[in-house]
Image 1 (cartoon, helix red, strand yellow):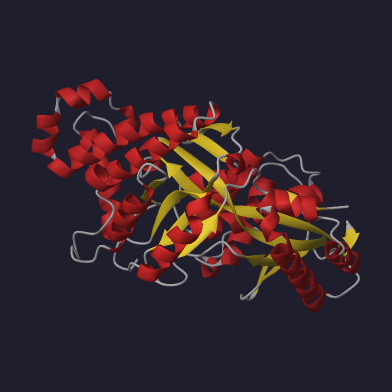
Image 2 (cartoon, one colour):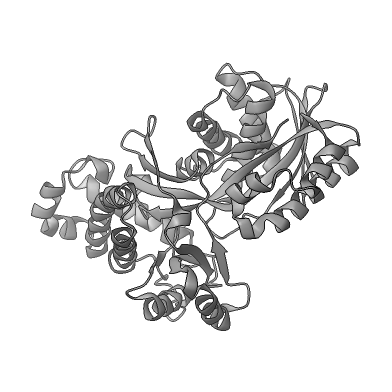
Length: 428
């Protein structure tokens, strides 16, 4: 722990510059120093000066491969990014967790009452209570703390701002009261529990796992109760590319039926073989019975099932490419994944409004500019929202200018893959 005012002096004097460069990039150090100082001052304003504090961080995440596969117990490849939620936090003696996030009200959880509160459903206070309950249920220590937080994980961007917040709360509890002994995998599971049970959203585990573990991570959901996690040792900073997330500005509203139909049709295809999800279906048996699936379900279900089977193979191939440091092979597979999402999974635009194709247009611009150079694909759930592109560093200014000229000045976000997940940044 360190006195909060000393923390600010050390930040100003450059004591933590190397740590910040590692997390964010060397070009972002000054911006992050200002941000950390701002959160430190906010802590004093909210909770009082003179406290001893630590600083914590949890990143957002990006889906790299495995588009719409996790809900049918498939495989995914995800990665943490250099947008994060940060916290200046300190133990208290109130048996209460109090978190004030920049731009939001205070979230409070009393540790002697960690039951689900109906009036908190869908609100961040439920996530705080749920994470605390998850730690207690697993036999770990819990205790009160105060925290001021700020997040630059873009809401609605597919980078999972909620998972970053959950992992941040778990990381704080881990280091303040458990000496950092709780594994990143367990923190992710606790975060998912909080979102499922307390927040009321039946999400999978990919978001929390990528945010907590950090770097590139391959996840196999064949057994959703015990997913297989493989962290991939790949230095993204060495590949000469930047990760760009492009917000097409497409309307996210009224898409619930589109998202649900992907899962429903995959599961209907599995049902033809007496199975509940496609992961349980033999690929060869499926191929031999396509006519039967067409008859009993529909053509789109066949195409979406083919996407599922192919994506599972691609996840392994992309992971292998990264493990062998073959970034060119990796990019080719990213493009292949994107075309599969467009042609087979068909989640690039909604058939309700076939003339509204902002995501399709963004993908076409990427194709024109990045063919033979970079890679691009739809990002996340699809139908609207964002796409992902891996852009050679020397092309980034030109690429961003073109994207922003079409979709608006804030349409292109230049990111990197962050090497670590939830962590204590400063604790001395």
